[in-house]
Image (cartoon, rainbow, N blue to C red):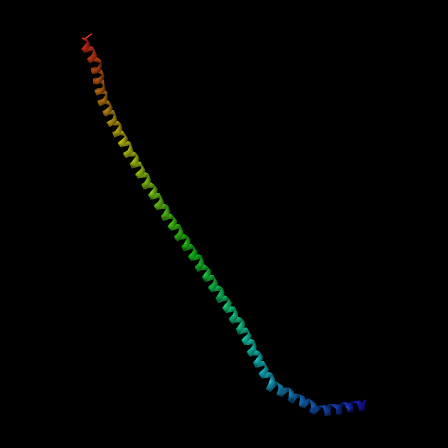
Length: 153
């Protein structure tokens, strides 16, 4: 067992330079490569996260602009519908006013036609009465003349 311990001791003594060399390589790696690699990875992560955040901000901005655009479109449609309704209302009011005026004119024409008809009727009655009297006198004369010419019988 002594021999085994002695071999183990020799093995440990011969591995000391390898362990020291390994520690030096590990320290150099940490100093030269690892710090720079961590910096590059941190920068890459920062840029990636920054790009993602910027993209999310741009998406939110685009959604806000889209919502604003849609709101303006709705407002414009509402204004157009109101303008169309006002125009339609104006047209209906003009139409109703024209109809009212036409009805009034028609009523006036009917009234004047009735008045003219009444005047014509009164004139015709007067003329008929005058003609009746003339005809009655003519009839009386035509009946009485032959009787008077016969000697009054």
